[in-house]
Length: 235
Image 1 (cartoon, helix red, strand yellow):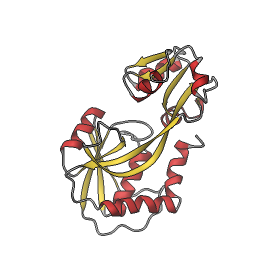
Image 2: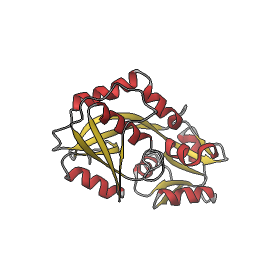
Image 3: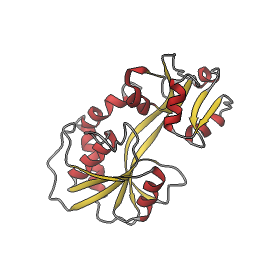
Image 4: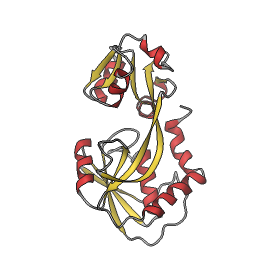
């Protein structure tokens, strides 16, 4: 477990903050490039969240936990935030959905080989890695895919891809861009999923309207795209 505070960000140009009203804890898990527990930068999602909180007068402190514990803590502890969090039916009543941060593209990624741009292209591959029991597994099985290789975690899926035990990995494309940079061959997005900043439902000291306006201001002046573009690219 590790805590770290971030004050401002050179990547984002924003109005000066109002008078600080306190500190908020944002729980998350190490998930490159979205959130990084180690290194000089916290990851682009945490950089964005910290800047938004700064604009409304709150300093953010990050707490990194394994994802199940992070989600449980955010649901249980008032005054706690969590990101990046996709909105799903099972999570709907557990959190206060504060800000839709960006649309995360999901698709097929390969190493060296041409990455499929469509489900039809991917159907002909011999083996496709997916995280066992996850969103991508369910999505492809629901569309008739029988060539899936369930993996227990991201490191195992990446290792299988590197060892050519699978032809492709169906995953978040920014994650592959962040992990492998130019090694990664990325197909076109098959779908996008909105990534949220969410709060504990009993949180009453975060100005939601101002937080949403901060996100809109960063989008309007181009700061949001400046931050996201290295990871979203043209996909």
